[in-house]
Length: 199
Image (cartoon, rainbow, N blue to C red; front, top):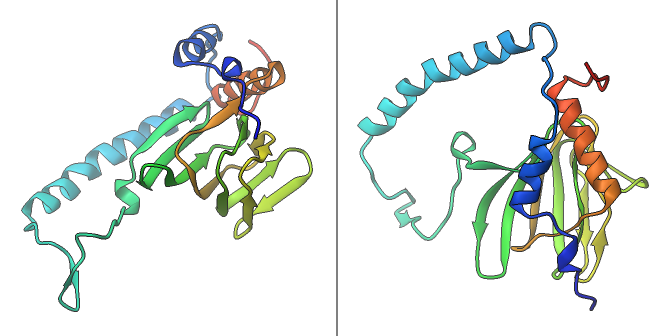
């Protein structure tokens, strides 16, 4: 099995430099107001749910008398999302020493770099659509299996998507000049609401 080249990966410092090199642009008219309205609605709704949770007694969950402390439940509203690429977020549901179950949420037009699989990986597209390379198009409900030792081409999502993935803990991206260009285009598209013309 070939080891992925460790020198072709961007570290956090390189990603930060790429992000800083982008020129700021104005959002589409109305976009800033719509975003502010969504944020403010979430801010005003949050104290009620937090106070309701604080008032509820903490009791180990059980079903038919069986205590469920050995099970893991991640509620949709409590998912810990974090950014892994421009327009792409990941939520780790459960993991052990070698494998993990995650959700990947991709905004429309976002891309994930090509990557190598040391272990087998299973994926189920829950929402939206995605292209694996230029030949394999997936829609909601499609299942995809990658054997150990396989390399995935770039994953892109024209309309955005959410994917459940069960695979290895480590991600082995293959960074190329073409990938950096697509990531920069994706960043520009997200900042300008799909309009790729420079201002």
